[in-house]
Amino acid sequence: MNASDILVARLIDWGVDTIFGLPGDGINGVMEALRKAQDKIRFVHVRHEESAAFMACAYAKFTGRLGVCLATSGPGGIHLLNGLYDAKLDQQPVLAITGMQYNDVTNTFSQQDVELDKLFIDVACYNNRVMSGAHMEPVADLAIRSAIDKRGVAHITIPIDVQQQPIKQSRSERNKPNHTSTHGAISGNVPSNTELQAAAELINQGKRIAILAGQGALHAGDELLQLAETLGAPIIKPLLGKGCVPDDSPYTTGGIGLLGTAPSEQVMEDCDTLLMVGTSYPYIEYLPKPGSANACRSTRMRSASDCVRPWMWVWWVIRRRRCACFGRCSNETTTDETPGRRLSAQQIHQRERDHRIRFRHQHHRLGALYEGQERADALLLRQSGDHGLRHAIRYRRPGRISG
Amino acid sequence: MPYAIAAQVAFPDKQVIGIVGDGGFTMLMGEIITAVAYKLPIKLVIIKNNTLGQIKWEQMVFQGNPEYQCELFPIDFVALAQAVGAQGVRIDDPKTAGEQFERALALPGPVVIEAEVDQYTAMLPAKIKPEQAAKFSEALIRGEPNRLRIAPTAAADTVRQVV
Image (tube, rainbow over all chains, first blue to last red; front, side, top):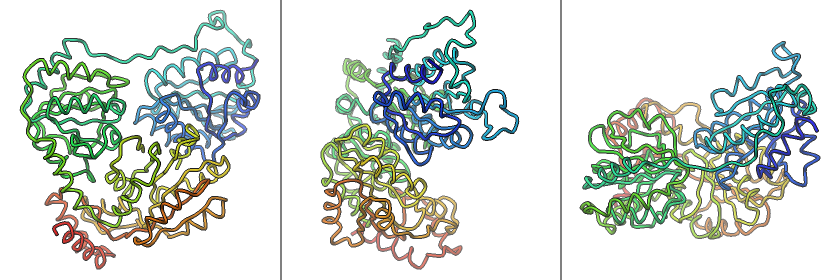
């Protein structure tokens, strides 16, 4: 058994059944192991490695599992980067497997001579060059575990000669075989009761509360609606949170941002308390002005804005996998008085409907065509840009829209 | 398109629809071959205005500059789809767009739907800030090449919204 065989065996043990990528002379050792295991792992052969990385990210988003992409040395690996940054910034678990040229010609102007571990330092939460056959197993396990636990990109690069080295070769006394496992315990950070209480108090002080719900709330639609009802707070949805609750729900004002809705902007301007749920919404110019509102954040996202927004009272910084704590939060808040409502559900709905009437460009007529013609369980993918944004705004049905 | 392909790989029995602009689509255009090769029945709606729309409006509304280097050389996406073994459908008439779209969704295998839209429709925010309106006007005054078509379109849209 060589390094590539053990890598593929560990991938299978971790439950990986699909890899997106392209072969090349710098990764052909791994390709041979994949050929031998093709009944257990499907290889999706793409035309450009950038696509492979995007596909791995999308696969993670849609399945909730690890996405895996593979590229050869030098230019192949470099091509992955764009899709890997997509995964990094949207915090999706992705493993990138790349090759390097022979160990003993590295950094000597050899063909496709790029030390990809150096290049990937910024994008990866785990990043390692495999130094020998015996090094492969623990590196594979730790890389996969890191991608899943840290919700980011793990990168393994393997020189082509190492890919074909027997796993017994050059094993040191310290490196005991099988000391890592393929079991990962999924956990999320849960707020302490003190923090939860502080958050509940902050929310209860609010008279005009708004909720900003991102992709971390995608699986908590019912809890969000319950929270909106309890607090009398409209739900504003950044694009990645588009599917949290359907746009025709009376509890949401729709999107926010350059092509968001006017009611969302109005709610943001009027609120005295903003509850941010599972979002790393980047356009902070659309958030309440510094000093004008209290903020309470429940998030599985990890972003700079978690800690460096001095004008906010960020009482509650939680990095969570899912926002299951919502039920608890809303229960806490209902024990005290329910804050007064600013807008009734009907008023919110009316505002949004008025706003829609504004949008009667040809784009939007076209956008309206999608609605109702697709199957109920359809997956909708939209690319950012003028049209993607227009469509995402126009589309109102619940479910998965992703981009 | 990579997202649509991955979604269909993950869920072979679900309907998958990708919505993409002509600029984004052409960046990784070769990947339509992957959908054909793996018989993935994705439906790709290419919204075609032969321009990098968002960038163009950002140049105008954020900076007050006339658009520059945003036009895209127009290509025939239907012919492209057919050349690589996918089906192609062109939608360019609002009156029949609905029926055409419905028919395109019902076609088997990967389908590229080229949907033509007006490139002169301004992408303006829901609440236009005074400085954004000023920048937009400034861009037109400073020599926006398509101002004679953009200005009437924006005016007509405004009237329609008010009415």
